[in-house]
Amino acid sequence: MTAESISIASRIAASQLQPAQSLEGHPPQQGRTTTFGEVFVESLQKVNNLQQEADEAIEGLATGERADIAQTMIAVQKASLSFEIMKQVRNQLVQAYEEVLRMPV
Image (cartoon, rainbow, N blue to C red; front, side, top):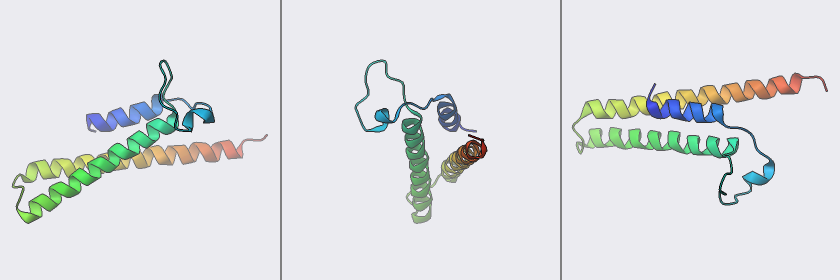
């Protein structure tokens, strides 16, 4: 696991749901906690950035602009690992949601 992937997973696990009003795009306030939605969106953006960096590294290697195959492979593995972690987080969220739906009211 990369440090960034671990950071993404730990921030998602440590975050708490806040009232819906905090998700309306208001600027961050002093002492305000980060909402789960904000952490999740930020994590998705980081995963997307790693995917784009890996694509650029592959393209650079294919066109000859980049000669270091090791760095290209590292970028690809970072992107792959972060995507797999994000899939697992998504699966856990879906599983938790389904479990809540099965609870008797």
